[in-house]
Image (cartoon, rainbow, N blue to C red; front, side, top):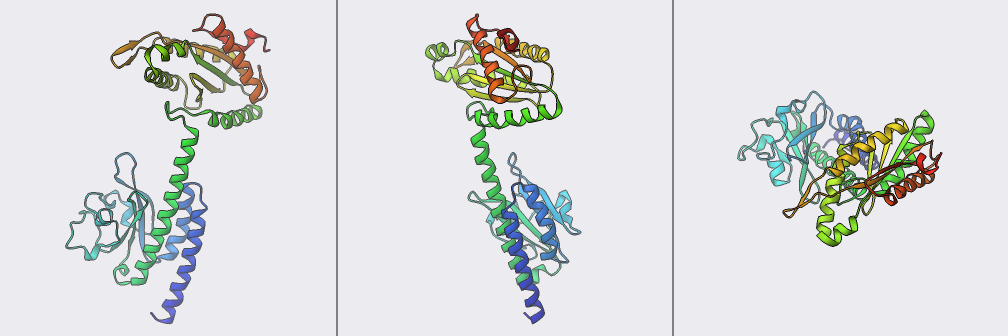
Length: 335
């Protein structure tokens, strides 16, 4: 390596270190790709390429990022998980020297493909296309190091997101949990105060749930909880929030609307639950009902504590007056 090339290589190593520091600080994959947009063309001038990641559903590769005048922009150039040796072997591949291996028919003959690895295996590919890439040992070295940094950043981001999701999602029902509710309720209350709109809070409790568990077993109770959760999720808008509050209790936040509308929508949910026929191990459970307490902010409360208290009092009234009923906070004296 001559002096000019050495200085250029040292400069690229500094760029690579800067890129590594920035992508490790990203909190979203989009932010990470924004950083790569500025660094990769400088690290690999007169080249083009892309980053491909496995889709979690079908495990096929999808292009998530590209730079330069690259065929990687074309769908036909996406690495094939069945034939791509970089995916199969988990090692970098110089496609111009892979005649002995069966390549995907879409592979270009002048690319350097570096696998992105996590603890499980290959989850993506960094592909660099260049006429000189096959003859440049230092360029390939930079590609390998870049892939290591990119893989580490993406896998760390995904791990953090999975862990965060685990802390906010109820594992049995798949609904948001109480921890999520605390943050969502504060956020929605702030929106209501800024916009001058209303927030509906529906508190739900399944009737005679302890008797169901005692007579049919906890597996049957779990099945009912899952079916009710699906029914509640299906019966609200995407903008609404459905949470498992604990045990057999649920809370729904209706974002926008009027108190009377909240009551009407709650009636639809009550009818949907009471019409459920849950089959568990061949036995029919067809007596599922729930009681509901409905409150509206700011009409029945001005903060999280007061609005939950209003909805809870209305729910208690519904339970004590016969169950399978809806009681609004206005009927309990919260005005």
